[in-house]
Length: 170
Image (tube, rainbow, N blue to C red; front, side, top):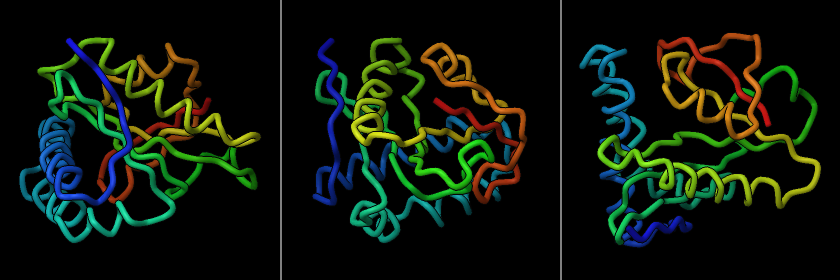
């Protein structure tokens, strides 16, 4: 299987891939944790075409898509948006947000490709902290910890969702 992770911009192809992935991955991540009504509203508000175009064109974001045999199977967003963990207060930091790979493509090499590209980009900025905010139910937390992220003690909520979350810092 040929695996490649690359930047995505607001082209027809990039937008089409993200529209599909964002909806599928949000459903995959949250369908067992949220009511259908809450999940539907979250997807409609955050992953519609207009919102995605605005987010793709926002200088605070860099979007990455991982492809397996030229099929988009996962994505992540590197951003300066979001509530930082206390340990990074008053420090420059970037967030790896919305990290996910379709469950039908959960091979470690695919996850590794996406995270390695994220970390390469984040580490290219000297003196910048790197953080992740994930639902405490997310099975990828152990994966992030195995890649050098440390779980923080503070518990927060996951963006606008009614889910408890944990911060991970590298």
